[in-house]
Image (cartoon, rainbow, N blue to C red; front, side):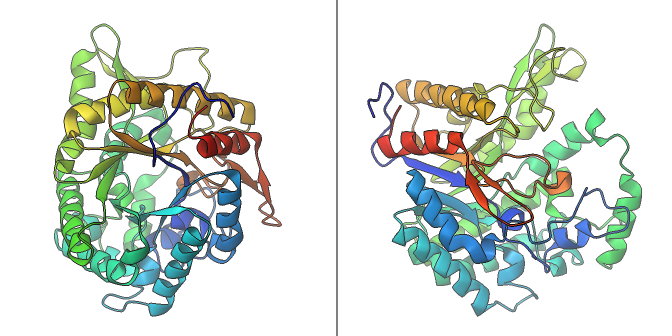
Length: 414
């Protein structure tokens, strides 16, 4: 393959998944409980997901065959510590086999220790609303690294540490939340976890300033716990970032939201080895705050704008504020039209290449997602995957965009 755009030597090329979205039957997690509540805000439960828990050997082999050199996946805390203080050797051994399989096929494992879901026992104790959770999370990270750390290439402590605040300030204040009886849902959830609505604090819904402090403390303590077991392991935090743009008069609203949702978290990574940038689109702001996409623009299945160039803008913002090396830990599009996915990746990678030309230290690119999977409250409707999955048969089908991106990865350029 003749390349006009080349990437640095040792650049990580991969795809990403999250345990709860692909493994299936994660019955000890808080999300499993939330999905099955009467009046749940989830359109459907995760169920078997794509059975990655059992099918990971052929799945990892498929990613390697496509040309990728890395795989980002998460370890499920609820499996490793199903009851407080009880660490499952069986679960840790399962993840060790996954890591060994990655190495067998030449994929460098990038591991996330927390990707939204938590053990159900934690929720009854106040979860991400209580500072004690930081210590409990660090203990889990220490035990996990003790058993698995020798096989991990890169460690992400917490996935999208800012997403709870983003949900609170952007999603819940927009039309996206209309028609959802959140009060009833919270009441049902509190009863299920034997706590009160005021004390209910699953990660995804802990959008208060106190929740932010707990999450960032958990990250810092987890980083120290991981480093104590393996000092040379690169450790970082991943942050959900949108390209925040202002039309005339919207600069103040944009700057305030950018500070609250991005900069406060980026500033917390100054002692990290890298920051993971996770970007899908842009947000526009006018004098009165956040704006909906303009009439007639192309939208994705998630309802936000088709804007591949957002990744370049967010990488530059992260570089400016954090000042540490960068990895694109998630970037992609939910669409049923794979030709749009292909164009999205082509334009996004041009944007990443522009950052590299300008001297930014970008060390990897991970497409979201490896497979069509369980997209949280939206169920299986949005399709982000490079590989399609038949929910009835679990048959995998590689999409053309996957073959193109794998060819780019193998050539380290395009």
